[in-house]
Structures are given as structure tokens and as C-alpha cells.
Length: 350
Image 1 (cartoon, rainbow, N blue to C red):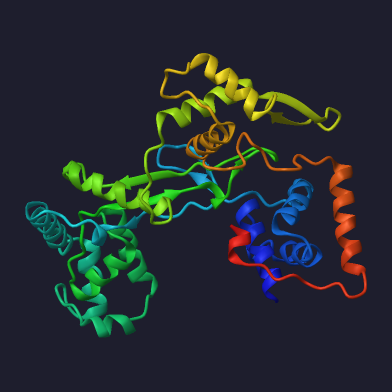
Image 2 (image 1 turned 90 degrees about the horizontal axis):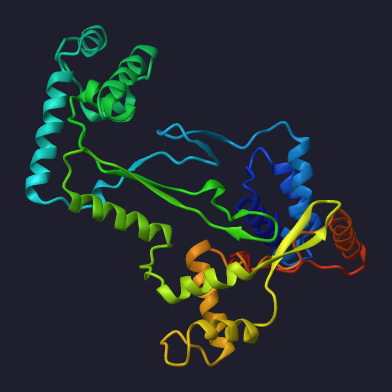
């Protein structure tokens, strides 16, 4: 598989929430057919095709229910410990250690643990070295006791295994968290996208609020690629909402129920309307339409998380005829003598 094909497959996985294994056939077929197009053009063609592909497939998006009972679509990542990234103060650290030691002590007299150790290790309180534990088979009896402990205590099954076999004290008071973003791709309609990420943190109820703030700060940085994000200025958000209120509906095909939002007039005209509200003596007054458009873009990115929000994805939505014609042009180009594949870069995908 060449670099270009891999790049298009990666872009399709991110945009349409496809599975690299289950949807491999359609990914490879589309990537080869669209290899001569830019990533954005290739994704535009696939946008229409994906509607019919999903309708013809019996697969459903992977999903489940959150802890609150809310339906969640997409890949739900498990809560993972972020304890090592959040340094507790000495008092909190001591309390966490004491609680962990207490749970391990009472678990040592759990009848399931006693039974397993006696029957499989050689004594009620007998344990083994970590090296021996690594070679110890995970037979059904061990898996049963580990699942039992993981249900009863704030431990993972892996932690329960090392406790049962080695007597190691698992850390019980954890700070865990995760980022949730459906399919890790923009959502919305064909022409207008948005990103929506959530942060979930799980901590013991007695954990100091400062620890929770630290955990949130770490996950928030991860949500933005490790960067510190500045709070958007109020003016940019108000400006975006001002333009949003003026957006109009334009039908691409009423027969196919395809429409998009468009902005009436030019940036200069919109700026003039804005300035009627915020006069020349107001700090939000604009004199250059380019600055007005720039701050709209900043507000749009802050609110919707995508440059393809109210501005829209160029050329979308496509009618069935347009999608078919575009696909035909691509196939025609690829069939011409001397047609070559154009390499892409990571910057093009992003």
C-alpha cells in the first residue's frame, strides 16, 4: 500500500468513523479510486457515497450507554488513570495510601481469595513472586476471583490478579479520566460541521478540589493537542452569533432535501450592519472588513470547533447527480495514459 492510499484511508476513517478492519474493503477501494484527487475533493465524493454504503450495510455504529444512561455513539474510550500526572499533596497522598492498604487487608479475608490461594497456591495466605505470577496460567478460577474483586473494589482485573497472586496492594483511590469525541471527527450536516468533545473525570468524593482542577487542566490540554488554549474574547463570540442570526437557507435541491446556510451580502456589508450597533466610539467598532472577517473566523472556531461551521464546506451538499459526475471525472482521469499518483503529506490530511 503506497503513502497516498494510506493518507486517504486515514482521512476517511477520521471523517466518517469507519473501522480500519471491518470497513477495510470500502476504504481500500475508495482510496485507490480517488488517489488522484486532493484529500478534500476525495472526501466530498465519499460523503455522498457513505450515505448509501451505510444504508446498504447491516452494521451499526459502535455504541453503548454512558454511566448516566445516555446513548453514546462512536468508540467510547475507557477511563484511564491519570494519577501519575497529578501530584497530590502529602496529606492526600497519605490518605490514599491508607485507604488502599485497608482495602487490600480486608480483601485478604474474602472467601473467594482464600479459596483460590488454598487450592491453587498452597495456603490461605500464601503468595508468589511477581516473576512467578507472570508465568502463572489465567485459568477460569483465577479469572472468576479477579472479576469478583474488580466488581467489589475500585481495582482493575489486572490489579486484582497481582493482589491475589502476589499480595501487592493496588492503588484504590485513583484519579481517572477520559476525553470523549464521537468518532473523533466533525459532526453535523454535509455542509456545516462542528466538533464536540467532553471530559469525564472520576475521583473519590473526598478528593480535594485542587486535585480535580489539576486533572481537568491536564485533560483539557490533551483535548487541544497539548496546547494551552486561551479563552475566546467576548467580542469574537458575539460577532459569530451576530452573523449566525443573519444566515439564510439556500436550497441546493428541494427534491433531494438538500440545503445549506449562506451569508447575505459581503463582509463589508455585514461589518456596516455591525457598526450600526457598535458606533465609532465603541471598542468593538470595525474599520476594516478583513479584520471583521478574521474575528468572525476566530469566534466560529471557538464556538463550533471547526472552520467549516457556518462558513460551510465548499461544494457541499452535493446532489446525487453531482456526486456521480464527480466520481466519473475521477475515474476518467485515472484511466488516462500516464496518470500518476500524487503524494500527500500529514498537513494535507489535517
